[in-house]
Structure formats: structure tokens, C-alpha cells
Length: 149
Image 1 (spheres, rainbow, N blue to C red):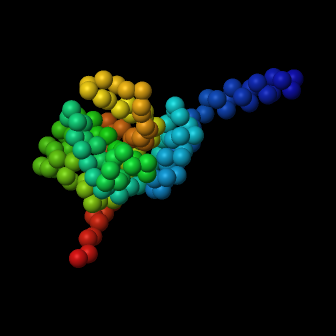
Image 2: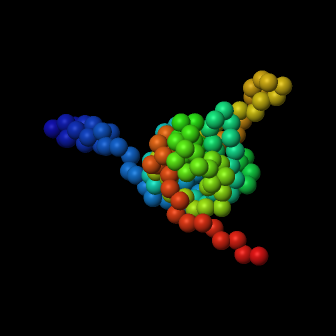
Image 3: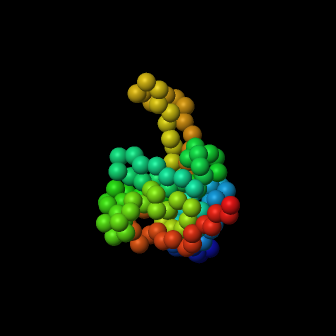
């Protein structure tokens, strides 16, 4: 009987989705994604965007000036989201989100990034924390950063 109860509890706990979190500390989020790898961490996240980049129609918003920085989190906007954003606001997201605080709903995941030399993948790599944005409703601006001179 006690084994039946134990098995029931284990099965029911496995059916529950992981808890959603609300976090704004990038290092805590990076640590959580490392602990949960290869699974991600779902939640609502708040960041300051410092830099951006574009590759194959996808826009990458970064929390650090150097996207390879260990403390960086990358928010990846899918090409169709980039097009929808540009059409709706008349500006591209790679320039719009710079120097703004944003809120993102999604799943943060640890991503392995391979180094490439002479067009070939090497045996060297590093990890980044990515949040993929597949719908415009997943991202919003909280405030503009005021620069004092």
C-alpha cells in the first residue's frame, strides 16, 4: 500500500509543469538555466538592453555590450516578429530596444555556441542564455534609460 501511494505521488509530481518565475537578476537566471539544462526556465524576465545584432533576419537583444560576456542574456526575436514589429512601429527592433528596460515572457535556455574557424566548426564552444521571442506579445518596454551628461 505504501508503495502505491509513493508511486502515485511520483507520477502526479511528474505531471506538474515547472514553476514559472519572475526574475530580473541576470546572473541568477543564468545559474538557473545551467541547473535546469537541457530544460529551460519559464517566466517573466526584466532586463536592460545594452546592445543588439542581426543575423539572417533574426534580431538579438543583449543585456551586455559584448554578447559573449558570461553575464549576458540574449533575447532572440524571430524574423516574423521582427517584420511585425517594424510594420507596427516603423522602426527596427535592433535600434528601438537599445537603452530601454524590457519585460519578456518566455523560456530561458542554455544554448551551446560553437566556435567556427575557416568555415568549419571547431571543438571549442561556450554557452549563452537565450530567450526566443516568437510572438510580439512576449516583449514590452517598461522604461527608457535616462543618460545624464
